[in-house]
Length: 195
Image (cartoon, rainbow, N blue to C red; front, side):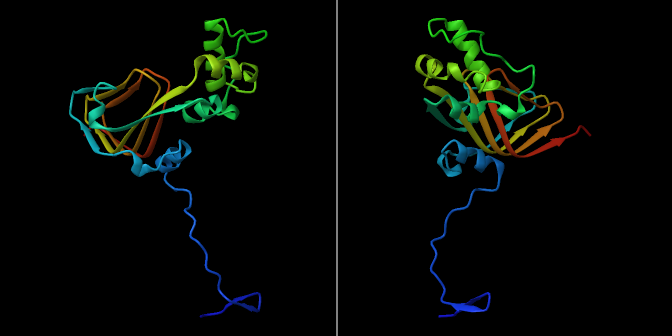
């Protein structure tokens, strides 16, 4: 057994249990923040051919996916929202006055303010929002590589969706369009200009 020297003092080595470190790539880190390991969701390579429109969730079979739910509004904000410190003066604001759980429009306005605005300003609404609108869904769509050829479009509709892709190759004229609240997490984005 080899002895270690620390500051001139000889010590016997200690057996350490290896602790998994936080993944360094952004996709794995984001998935870990959702309580997922990257290997839990299949991540196929997907090519959207020239001029083709791919509509999610209709064509989910081409991707790996997992539907998550959380009863926690702060967790939902972390999944798809805007961090409080990144909110601007144009961020959604909660309704004025005390929370009114019987007013659906006010609840939705407060929920938008909490998730996409300053959650501190909407904190009084947290409990009514969680009780009346929760649990909150998130469809996580996964691919190892997504190639979007010229003129092809990935259109995301339906429920709140997160697109977690290790590498995206976006050809000139290719597009990704979100029509839902969501999150895009790409490990690497390569934009290929027209020749």
